[in-house]
Image 1 (cartoon, one colour):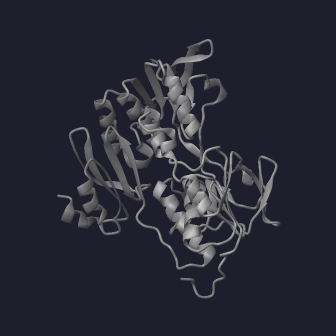
Image 2 (cartoon, one colour; image 1 turned 90 degrees about the vertical axis):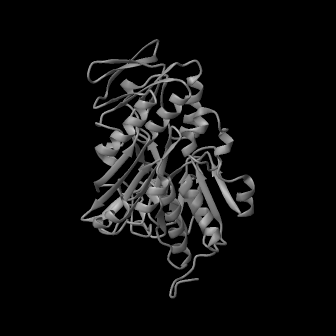
Image 3 (tube, rainbow, N blue to C red; image 1 turned 45 degrees about the vertical axis):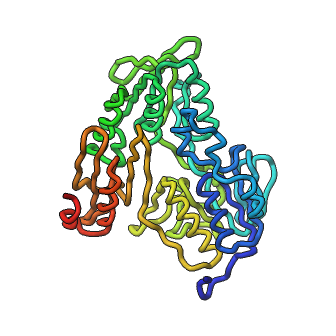
Amino acid sequence: MRREGTIANEDATVVVAGAGIGGLRTVEELRRAGHRGELVLVGAEKYPPYDRPPLSKGVLRGSKAASGARLRDDAFFADNDVVLRLGTAATSIDPIDHRVALDDGTTHDYDQLIIATGLRPRTFPPALRAPGVHALRSLDDCLAIRQTLSGAGSVLVIGAGFIGCEVAATLTEMGLSVCVVEQQPVPFAAVLGDTVGEFVARLHRSAGVDLRCGVGVHELIGAHSVVAGAVLSDGSEVEADVVVVGIGSEPVTEWLDGSGVRVGDGVLCDERGRTSVDGVWAVGDVAAWRTQTGAHRRIEHWTRAGEQARIVAHEILGCDDAEFSIPYLWTDQYGIRIQIFGDVFRSELVWASYDDNRKFVAVYAADGIVTGVVGAGTARKVRRLTSLIGRPTCALDEVAA
């Protein structure tokens, strides 16, 4: 149903720059909501849209074919009349003529443009780069690591965030000797805090990972320009045939320079995905939407990208408002799914419990209100606690026992 007083853009030409989950979901939501105009999906990679979570798990392990990560087959794009421009990246926007330029020298006019260019991994400085050192973001990254693992016995993973921990778990299950180095005192410290981070650390150490926290990498060592290990900031040395770097990511926004689109930590948007330039929107990991506090924040959630896509599609078409559900993300490690509901960012841990080295649950709050729940191997209890999000912390007594 259209909102009264809005002008629908059902026949508008829409270009989506970025063919990850945010870009694909935008295409899907536009067609689902009744968009009939030209729809162009531009992707820097040569592959059709694929699922990234399996790259650090099944695809890396080899138990899932690379083709199995694909999200939609060719028939989907043909049936929905979506023009795929793969292997070419957007390089600039002309907001006056409503035109986006691509790196193959072509341009495409648009009525509405959605920015969904995602993230790129942070990398080591040139002095710490060498053959055998990898980051993991793309399918090509994953396949390169898999190839390097052939004949390898030991791996150094730098960074104990989501990617680092998932890679460490997968490689440990493959029988490799894995050392993880993390500058923070525990894994996930910046997101989940020290207590839950220690739960995650126990999970890895019990699986045999050599987890070293509170230290960084001073230099890589090797012979004939091939990595053989690293010297850490505490002076110790780690042997490694392969190094995987997982030290965070940064938004892909440099191509917007001079366009008038405001950027900070990502593309700055209002609470419905509009940028500072008329007719230009942003979704997914690259997008920093305005929150209820007035601050802009990127949320790197697989599910949030889809919800942002639905909101933007409905705004473009003048449909009834679409809204967010409770934020949710997950990570699978050693057969355990760690689930994160709500907003634990800048919240305080107020209650936690754990059982052996594999199961735990924790509740976060801010200003006396429950904001988030994190659990591993405790799905039933997590579901009960999730019902408390938005309620006073005193309600914990009802279900935490």
